[in-house]
Image (cartoon, rainbow, N blue to C red):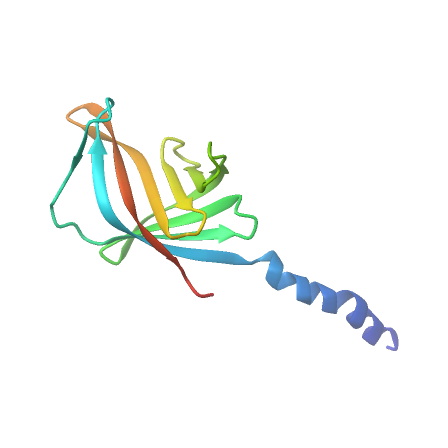
Length: 141
């Protein structure tokens, strides 16, 4: 029984201190401000229709190599994805490709102030791309 305090002090206590760091995740909350649809020649349209609020909740792991993205429309959760980090050409954004559909790209500014989400849509049998743009804020843990 004399060994218990030694084991606790040298093995268990350091593991308990590391555990909060190992499961650390940061949540970023984003909301749309602009939505555009673009044809393959990049001719874009924007709509003045009143749309329900679209929010994205992005849970980033500590190393930011993966993200979990949840989409809410009008306060209801409508979708969620797991996304993997994709290198950005100029390195100013954190870009994530949705694992189930690599054509869907979600990107965050490094300061987590803005986002963009690009995904394909079908319009009249032709493939177009929809862009959603907006602002973000970091949620308190």
